[in-house]
Length: 400
Ligand SMILES: Cc1cc2nc3c(=O)[nH]c(=O)nc-3n(C[C@H](O)[C@H](O)[C@H](O)COP(=O)(O)OP(=O)(O)OC[C@H]3O[C@@H](n4cnc5c(N)ncnc54)[C@H](O)[C@@H]3O)c2cc1C
Image (cartoon, rainbow, N blue to C red; front, side, top):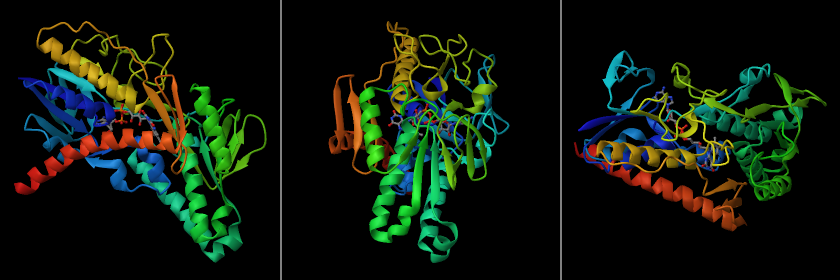
C-alpha cells in the first residue's frame, strides 16, 4: 500500500481522489481547512439569494466515508510541507506521504496598490465571504422595504469590481433577482442599482467575442450599468476613485478583479509566477519533486500556444485526472506516454435567471434557455456524483 495525501477538497482535490481510489493499493487522506466542499461555480446564485447553502456546500467527512476505509478525511489547515522528510504539519501534528497532491486553490487578490480595496470590498472565493455578501445584499433589500430608509437614504448602489466570469455572473444574477423582487416587493427595490466596473476595454477580457457580446447585451437588458476602461485607484467608505473620470458612490462593493494563489503556496520555495501560482513541469510536478504534484487554481496553466488559461473548475478537474493517472502508472511501473496539455472543452456564463451563453469545443455556440439548460446539466451532473457518495457516507455514519 502507498499513502497519498491530497491537500484541498475543492474541484481538483475531489476529482483526484475519485480517480486514485480506483488503484486498490492507494490509501488516500484528504486534508481541508474547512469541513465542506464549496461549489464556487454556483456561488453567484447563492449570493443573489436564488440558491440555498445546500446548493453550494457539501460535507467532506460524509463524502470521504462514502468510499471504503482507504479514504480518510482530516479537517485541518496545513501549515508546512517538508519535502525532504516527506511530511506535512497541521495543528502541531505530522503526517507522512509517499505521493502528495497540492490542490489548495486561490483567493481573491485585493491588489495592494489600490488603497482601501481590501478594507471596503467583499470577495467571493470562500463560503464565508459569499455568506457575508448574501447578507449584505438581503439587508439592502430589507432596508428598501422600510419606509424610514426610503425617506432617509434614496438610491442604493451596488458595485461589482472586475468583469471577468465571476463578476459578470454575480452582477447579472443580482440584477435578475432585483427585477423579480420588484414585482412582489414593490418599486422601492428598483432604487437599488448595480454597476459593473473593469479596467479593460471589454467585459470578460480574453474570452470569446460571442460570449462577450451576448453577456454585454444581457447585462444591458437587466439594467446593469457597465463601466469599462475604468481603472480603480482608491476605495474609500462609500466612494470609489478612478485614474480618470468622476468617482462613483457605492453602498457596498464586491471585488472579483483578480486572484492569487492560496497562502500555503507562499511558504513553499519553488518557482512561482507573480500571483504565487506554482510553475509546474509538463507532468505537473512541483519544484522538480517526483512525488509532489499540484493541480487547479494554484498552478499556472498555459495552452499549446503558450497563452495563460483562466483558472476554472474544468481545468482543476482535468489536471486532477491527469495526476491520478500519472501516479497510478508510476506505482504500477508503467510508462505514462502523455504529458499534460491544458485544453478547454467549453465555457458557459450564467447571465441571470434561466439564461446563459456558452461555447463548446470552439464551435458550438448557445445562448438563452438552451445555454442555461446545458450549464445546469453540467453542474447537476457534477453535484449528483458527489451527492451519491455523501448519501452513502451519511448512511454508514448513522448505522454506527
Ligand atoms: C462566482 C464564480 C463563478 C465561477 N464559474 C465557473 C464556471 O462556470 N466554470 C468553471 O470551470 N469555473 C468557474 N469558476 C472557477 C472555479 O470555481 C475555480 O477555478 C475552482 O474552484 C478551482 O478549483 P480548485 O480545486 O483548484 O480550488 P478550490 O475549489 O478553491 O479548492 C481549494 C480547497 O483547498 C482548501 N485549502 C486551501 N488552503 C488550505 C490549507 N492550507 N490546508 C488545507 N486546505 C486548504 C480550501 O478550503 C478549498 O476547499 C468560478 C468561480 C467563481 C468565484
